Image 1 (cartoon, rainbow, N blue to C red):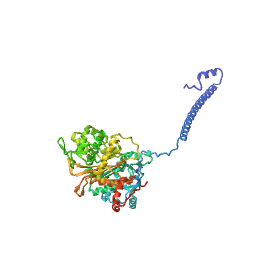
Image 2 (image 1 turned 90 degrees about the horizontal axis):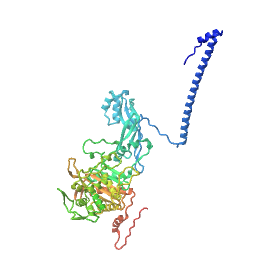
Image 3 (image 1 turned 120 degrees about the vertical axis):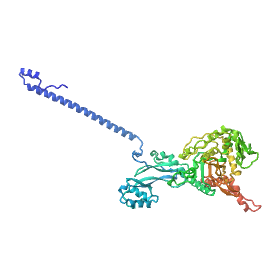
Image 4 (image 1 turned 180 degrees about the vertical axis):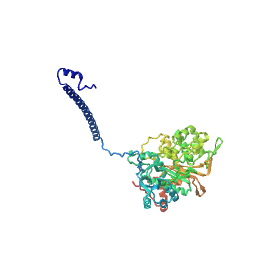
Amino acid sequence: MIRTPLRPLARILRARERGENPDDIEAENRRRRHEEIQDRARRRAEGRLIVMAGCFILAFGTVGVRMGALASSEPAEPRTQVLSAQIMSQRADITDRQGRVLATNLLTHSVYAHPHQMVDPMAAAQGLAQIFPDLDEERLTKDFTGSRKFMWIKRKISPEQMQAVHDLGEPGLLFGPREMRIYPNGDIASHILGGSGFGNEGVSSAEVIGVAGVEKAFDAWLRDPANEGAPLSLSIDLTLQHAMEDVLASGMLVMNAKGATGILMEVETGEVLAMASLPDFDPNDRPRPLLTGEPSDSPLFNRAVQGQYELGSTFKIFPVAQALDLGLINPSSGINAQAPMRIGRFLINDFHHYGNELSATDVIVKSSNVGTVRIAQMIGVDRQKDFLEKLGLFVPTPIEMVEGATGQPLVPSRWPAVTSATVSFGHGLAASPLHLAAAYATIANGGRRVTPTLVHGRQRPEGEQVLSPRAAAMAVDMLRQVVTRGTARQANVEGYEVAGKTGTADKPRASGGYYKNKVIATFASVFPASDPEYVLIVALDEPSVETAAGESRAAGYTAVPVAAEVIRRVAPLLGLEPATDEILPTIAARFAPRVEPGEAAEIKLVANQ
């Protein structure tokens, strides 16, 4: 900008020549300068007013648009925003299929110490040791008189313990609120639930996380605020679970067994109604893992899922069912049962001599190893492996537990003729009882693959057709005859048409070979046989019972009676009505001695509608 002087010399000189007053020139220039300054100030003010007006228009426009959007939207309850520094402690409940609580939360307190604020550290240590007997008074005294500024005393305490600590009157002992996970049914379904612990901890709250079982498998879901507190509904039934555990505990005692497991599964859906492994534990006070000995020595070991056992003769129905499906045999086909049978340098024998020939049905009924191997040889190694793989016996079950992935079956790396033979009667391939339950459910389900699940009501894709319905029905009929006239006669529970197969397998040594006096006794069953709805697996670890003929470890004398008692207990709870054609002869036999000769006796059974 060029500044014009107020008294330009040229104009002053001309004004003097003309006799004008030079001061008028200065006044005129000053006036123009002031007008220019005012014009610039006005333009600057007008620009600022325009910018401010634009800001107001934008702000009120944004508010108006937002108000319009809110007015046109559906009303909803706002969700609480969790700050990054806050520990989320809320965790959804777990319920059974009937909505009964299996795991929930309880508000409790923790107790911690600020040793530098204590008035009498030694008295505080003595008082805490009396309230909590598991605490070491000497160690507490050392910590309280040392250089520590903070230390946990107990992560969770009862109201009575809180009051007792409060009564000590020590200002250095403080309390913090928090939620804890409780299992109101104690040790019932403990292996399924698994347990929980604390993750991120603060003095005013703690994060509850799953450490095993479904608690860990669904940990993210149970902690997700988006679920708005909806409970996780499991497929198990609390009443059925308690009944099974009760019977298994009694069976372990009577049969002198080291452990026991049982699985009750719906045939059509694969939903597990009850699954127990004994010994068990209380998830409210979960024990520490064992660092020595065998894994199965720990109560944390889940025999139903993690136990990999050679399940013996329960496998015999698989090659027979496959041969029926392939049209290689029919139930009455004659099978060479002459024993012993030689494969290479190995001899395969039977427990009893059954003659030179058995029908295919009697191979199962009498549990002939030789007959089963003959049928497996008809099938061939490749087809045998393919069928067992389709039954799911080569991979872990997809059950919704973190332990499920650890249940990897022990499958032979090579399948020479002798391996094919031994696998056909349940030796050489180790799988879990849950694998066996799923495989039997597949047969009972008309040959359609069943996948086990612990979640109630979940929509699942239909399984592969592994067997033809006709072959599956014939296989179930064979299993029924095992109960009526074979090795499982003690499982013939009146009115419930039980079908099943026993299996007694020697336990392998960790160093190689097998124990001579330790077995896994298993009974795999289906009921009712005429219209299969449920599969029950019962397995006892190292059972032994005294019989009239002496000590016995066979499944027919150990696992079968226990399974029969489980069925007697759970069948009425499942709403199954006893079959009258099985009960009437029994009732007639009971009443027969009371009927006088020559008199007609009429017995009627009235069933509730």
